[in-house]
Each structure stands twice: as C-alpha cells, then as structure tokens.
Length: 453
Image (cartoon, rainbow, N blue to C red):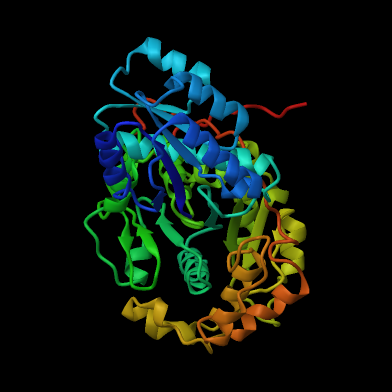
C-alpha cells in the first residue's frame, strides 16, 4: 500500500529539503518535484488521461509556487482532480491562512520548515481521504490498494474456545498468501499472542493509548516485525495497563494500522471492554469463536445478544466459527446458527488437540505442520473470510503451489467467492462507553442508544 506523493516547489532548496524528508516516510513513493504551477497541472492532466488510479494520492504545494498563487493553484487542483489530496506547505500556520486553505480545497496545512511527524500525519490523512474518494468514483469498495486496509476481529464466546489460536492462524494464512498483515492483541489484560509466537517486546498497544495523532514512525516503534511476516502489536505485559486503552485509543490505533496494512487481524479475547467493542463495531468482518457444547453455545448467544443490545453489531453481521467439532458432536453447526442467528462458516474446525500440543507448549504455533487437520481447516476458514486475497481477486495459486498454504484451504474458495456467503459490513458509528465513577477499570455502564420501538 504505497502512497504516491507529488511535491510542487519553485525554490530548488525547498524542493530538495522536501524530497529528502518525503524519502524517509514509510510506504511513500515521492515523485520528482515539479517547479511551477503549469508543470503540476500538466503532469496531473497527463496522468488523469490514462486513469484516475495513475494520479498521486497526495500533492504538496509550496507557498512560493508560481506563477499561479498557491491558494489559487490548490483550488484549481481540487476542482479538476478531486481524487487527489492537496497539502499546503507554508511558513504561516495561523487560523486565517488555515481557513483560506481549507476553503480552497486543501486537506491539510504543514508549517515550514516541515517536521517529520507533522508531514507524515498530514500526508497520511490526505492519502486516506483520496483513497475514499476513489472508491466512490468507481474503485471496488473493499479493494486494499492505497491506504485503507480491512479489519477482521476475532472474539471468543467464553474463555478456552481457541480464540487466540484462531486469530494467529488467520493472520499467518494471510501473510503466507502475500498480504501485508498486522496482528493486534486486544485482549488487554490476558493477551497471549506473544506467548503463542514466542515473542517478547518492550512495546505494546498501551504505549499508543495517549497519542492523539499516531504517525507512521510512532506506530513503527510500537509494532514488532516478526520473522513470520506478521507485524505484531502486543497487549501490555502488565495487565493493569490495559485500562489505558479506551475506545478512542482503539479507534486511533486501528485507523493508523489500516493506513499501513492490507489486513488487520484483532484478537479481542472474551471480555467486552470499550476498546474491543469499538474494534468489533468498526470491523469489516467480526468473527465469534465457539465450541459445540451447551455452555459455549449459550455464551455465544449471550455475547451476540449483548452486542445487539449495545448496538455494537447485529447477529446477522456476525460470523461464527465452530471449533473442536466432530461428527459425533450432539450440537452441530446448523443448530448453532439457528440458536445464535449468526452466519456459521461452511468449514468447522476439527477436535484434534494432539496435533497442536507440541507447538502450543513450545510457544511456536507458526511451526504447526501443514498436514495438520486443524491448520487446514482454519486456513480454509481464512479463505472463506476473504483473508487470503483481495476481495476482488482470485486466490493466489502461487502460494499454494509453493507449499506455503495447505492445498486443502483452496477447495471451499472454489465453490464461492471469498467471503460471499459471510456477513461483511462497512464500519458504522462507534458505540459510546461510559465508565462509572469508582469502577477502577471495570467496564462502565454502556449508554444504550435505544432500539425500543
């Protein structure tokens, strides 16, 4: 997900300084600076004639560009190329110029000389805006190109149903398929993603909680790049620090991750907190894991009903994964679907803990053999969820041929398009959480927004 940036600066020294700074931005592809307004408009016009997708996501306009004044140039670019986010670089960052720049169609204002943090934040915001406009102009809504990846949350009906193991395998499957994937541990008090992957890291999601504007550099410092290809954002080692991550922090973190990764898999654990409720509500796909026994199915129904009452997510928008299934199980997936009113995936995960015991005890589930029936089932479910390829693209045959993905995972994908039978929705408004006075970190009463009719 590369952000293309076209700077426009008439001053050669300013152009060199801007280009140097842009080259340090992660996932950025800066073009050579154009020296004047005519060159900028000609360049954009030539690219737009080929395709809207050829246009850069962001254009930086220096205050001393000429011969057309900067604000007039911004207005021209905004009118002729609405799919481009324009950012003004100016030594004057007062409210009057800021208001004039916004009226002209700019998506941001950066002071001169520009700082890395401010430039990165403004470029990221403008790129996200440009990606949204292009989706409305005809690009498939779920396409992962450009900023704006998909978020998949994995929650458990109760403790011990295999939530974290499923989330880790989903992320590993997506990474093996060539997708740039982040795995977030949002089980804030009892997160075990690091234990499953044998990872210890000094940073966690709690370190991002107090930051209002998460820049790419700050995010990079908090994320651990694992040798499996996953980017890991772990839960805090000290469980009490989980209180620092509220619903607003969760939104900011997931927005920052969306801008850098094609896919963000979030392990939400089994407890409903403000942070993981915000994640579930804003997710493209929400997965609930259960096992086919009476206690777990009742817990799954209880969780789904709670999400509905609190307006976090509807039952029909929730995807159920049945773990530890066997043909002799009295409660079958069809019955679970009927009881919970959710959409159960076509592939249940078999009960075969003996296959997992060695890698789980060693804390290296990434080394699970491809012949494992549990791994094959979970990676097949990942295909059903649409995690192994972009939603509009076919499954990547090269990864299967190379042995990175178990061949069994491709069978269900051939029967239907990835995710076609699953409930996928666009993010809605985030449910509001209110902490009661004196709760000391326990989730406070939710503000019911009412559906009584």
